[in-house]
Image (tube, rainbow, N blue to C red; front, top):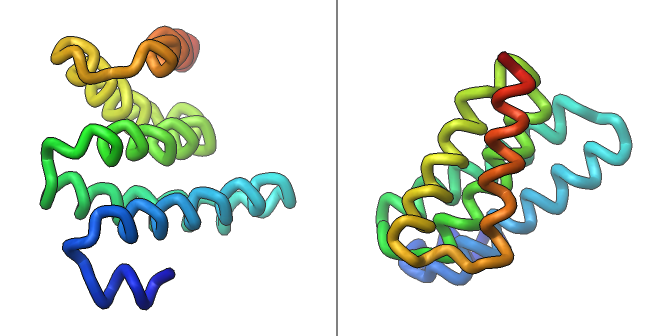
Length: 120
């Protein structure tokens, strides 16, 4: 997957697939209680999404998908992860206000707001 993504950085689909593979690795690490490895995997996913959304700023799928590692990193870092949660919230709210957020994704907004309130 990495070779494909590196060979064709303009292929948004391959970039998303690589990011999602890193998310899956992060989930496996979390299940194994390997927190540092989980954080690293989610950071890799986030870096891929950041590059992808910088290159394709109107790619709604990449923007929505980027909120997954942001939310997980926010939870993994606890109080130190509030910035990740705020960034995810900003992305989702912006998409919602533009009418580009699927209804099934809207509950994430309230969930992030509740987590941020809990952290204060």
